[in-house]
Length: 201
Ligand code: GTP
Ligand code: MG
Image (cartoon, rainbow, N blue to C red; front, side, top):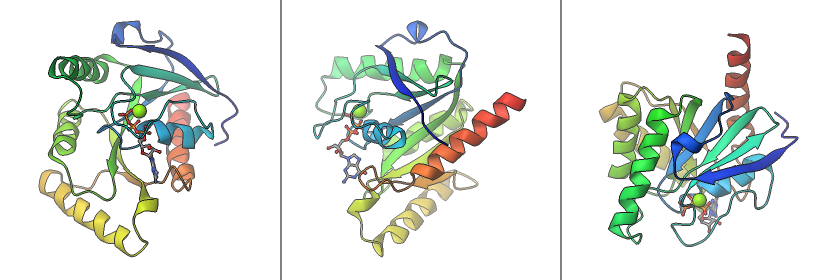
């Protein structure tokens, strides 16, 4: 899919104030610093559409970006960032869960996990919660450039084995690198296929 336009629309912490348009949207969620904002820039080939930082806790609001004037990408704050004060964290968690529970335009979520790390409780719990709430999601392994080509398959296999302790099947997944562009076409094709299905249904 060709991205001919990608524009920032709005940021807010209240799901009721998100864009009213009935366009399909796709949200990126995961721990702070996993690479959500970087992935949005990589997918759209825009260097700084979404703000990124080496320090966790950069994205603090629900950010809508409109793509090709007919669908949204949504950048969310990370969960599980310990250095945000406890009260701030509670507010994040509240509006993140409110976003997922109430946003009817949400078509699918992408749960980002760092491909170098072992499965983290908070990610597994979040995926469980998405499942219970019947919110379709894919896993996106990020930062694939940081693992050698030999090590990557073993990490994915180990992750899959853990997932199979909780799920009947491994959810759909993508392996990506925002530095090299790995996985870009796969993610965009996946979104494009869903957008086309929605148009014809
Ligand atoms: P929060 O907004 O704080 O929740 O973080 P985030 O998930 O949006 O992460 P962000 O995109 O800001 O990236 C965090 C750091 O990881 C930055 O220093 C990025 O440059 C780096 N990073 C993100 N993706 C990749 C990747 O694929 N490869 C490498 N090597 N670094 C990456
Ligand atoms: Mg971010």
